[in-house]
Image (tube, rainbow, N blue to C red; front, side, top):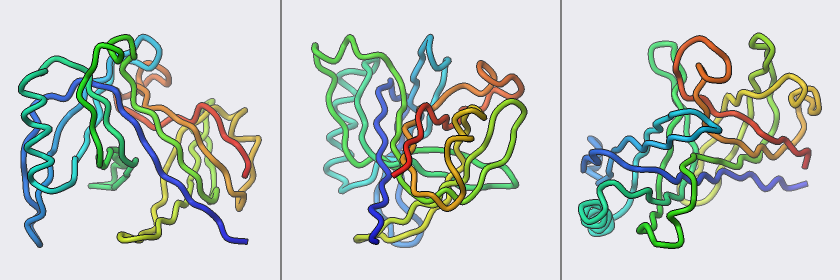
Length: 194
């Protein structure tokens, strides 16, 4: 059976200080930015994103941001995680953006994601669990990623290691929901066996 893996993320938030940069190896342009997504439901969070594309596309975003510096934009891309000095960080690769519109003013700020992959394991974290989910990407940039996703232990108990699952999640303020540090964490709101 062929598995259809999936990684999609959408962010509604206010970008601040986007910086145009280039990769060291082949000088590809990207924008690096912090996106603020304050919410009564998910906490007062900020997520990090990198917008990829041709320089004309990135300059188009910078122009729109200059016209709407305090507006909540919609960004579409993928969730990403990496480790640095023993700490795991979550961010977003952004491929599309939309200029804020009158219709979008009522949309609350948030950062959400959908991942589909193989459950590689779970471990307890107090009253909650951390799931390890393997997601394989094909296409122009194939890669395998393992994501650590937080969830309630009751939700984690509904799935078993080795199962293909779809995780619908949101970024939350760890301190607001778990106590401890003020890290922003990926949190599974729903897990479906596929």
